[in-house]
Image (cartoon, rainbow, N blue to C red; front, top):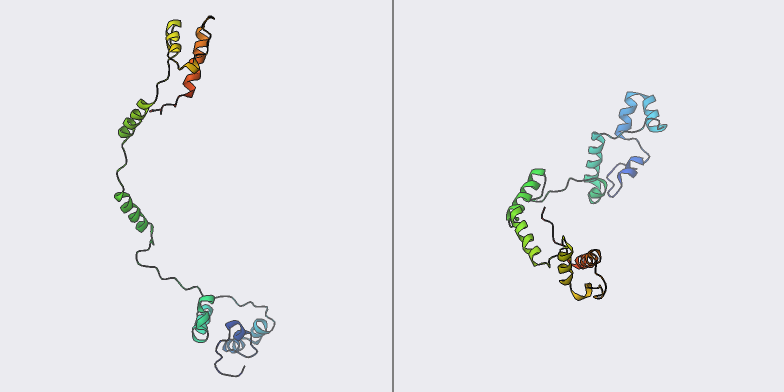
Amino acid sequence: FEPGRYEGLPNEVYHAANGISSTMVKDARVSLMYFNARHVEKTIIKERSPVLDIGNLVHALALQPEQLDEEFSIEPVIPEGAFTTTATIRAFIDEHNASLTAMLSADDIKALLEEYNATLPAQVQLGGSVEETGQSYMSLPEEFQRLEADKKQTAAAMKACIKENNTTLPAQVKLS
């Protein structure tokens, strides 16, 4: 390279070009063995440092401003009102929750469930005696009264019909 300004020249190409940089001169002044190991033999690896990063940034700003976004991560501008801390998120959630309608109390929910359960058809009771079971059996819809009238009707057979009927009914919502 001839001395001068080279626009559009990538930083890596600039530093890889044949020539002596100010860093090389400084290293040679320290020790020619160090200069040889670092720049000729390349046994000493160049480590990243904040100073090197700033140098690369200044180079990019001066010579390659269009590639600044590609080579460097620039801290984004945080828009006004953005959530930046847990406190701002919590404040938003609290404000939103305050705008919601109040939730039902446990007693209100229980009352609504009792109202719903009252609209459902009641289960037919099995009965404690043969007579009670017979009365329950006679209250069943006809499609569940399957026992033949001329044969002996046992309590077990009537209870089976009652249970079959009860399984077709919608279940009540449990309250406890």
